Amino acid sequence: MLLSSVVQVLINQSRYDVALQMLNAGFDMATPNNQQNYKRVYQKAMIHLKTAQYSSAIRMLLILERIVPLEWKTQLYLAECYGNLGRSGLAVRHLSKAIELQPEECSLLKQLQTKITGMSKAEISI
Image (cartoon, rainbow, N blue to C red):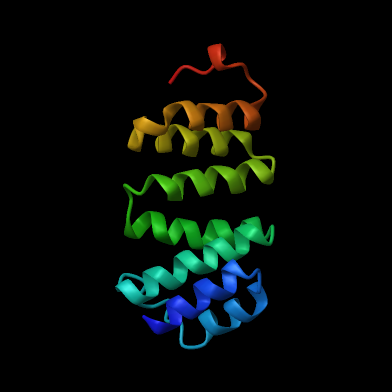
């Protein structure tokens, strides 16, 4: 648990290289389902996302999606990554799933969807 806290401080300080090194030390991809590894996968995904390593972030986020399929923020981050890679179809699919999982955030998520696709809100039927 201490490692996660230290890594989070490093992420908050934008010291992504050091945070990633710490996460990679002792990281066990064979058992991503335990709580400690889940947190590490999440933190690695956020580092890759913040450093514009979208393909790497997607790999981590897809692991998270398998572990916790009903987490709407995972869908949001997947949409952001796919959108930044120019894959708007996948971005819209994940935003739609995020809206389905978290309808309270529907307005915000539709704004993001509009930004990614360039479509007007009226054209988005969710």
